[in-house]
Image (cartoon, rainbow, N blue to C red; front, top):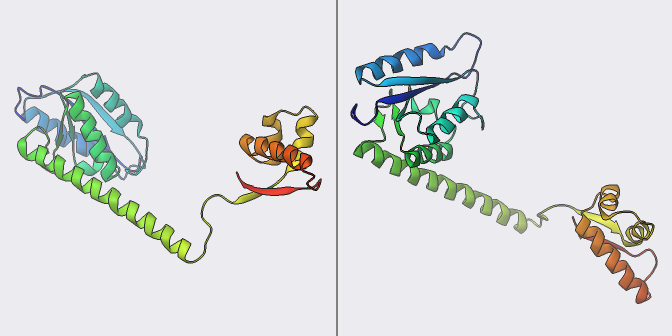
Length: 216
């Protein structure tokens, strides 16, 4: 990226602890110097203090992405790529968002500039790696399910006994479906089916205390 392509730049820094052992100023100082050498104007600095990289939500990063969507700057400059992405999937998704907004991404320590041909190639490789990672996770999940079935384990939510007569009696007394569901700890659909089944069974001469087991 040359200076004409990105005159306005946002800096992003993150430290995992806020007890004084880690200081974002070290990251920001090097980023400011780099931006000055490139003749870029730093329009804002976004810093997340005491936030782990694995956290799903980072206030300053979220605000940065919102401002990127509004094109308040032309590029984002970070000290190292692991300061930005909390996972490979998040990294690829967020960088794709920046690209869609027309905002470049530069990682100082990694010498990575996604506005260049080599940077775009790296982005494609990251995307392929993320897809490979997703495929591996899906295959592990499927293998685990197959193994559980082979051992005779029952999968899915546990079955809950439902007393059809009790459901029907509550409904006949004017209790709402929502209240019945809450009282018996079942879904409203399950309560509906139990009441309907009870009515059919009574007509067919079924025992008063018919009880069924449904998935809820």
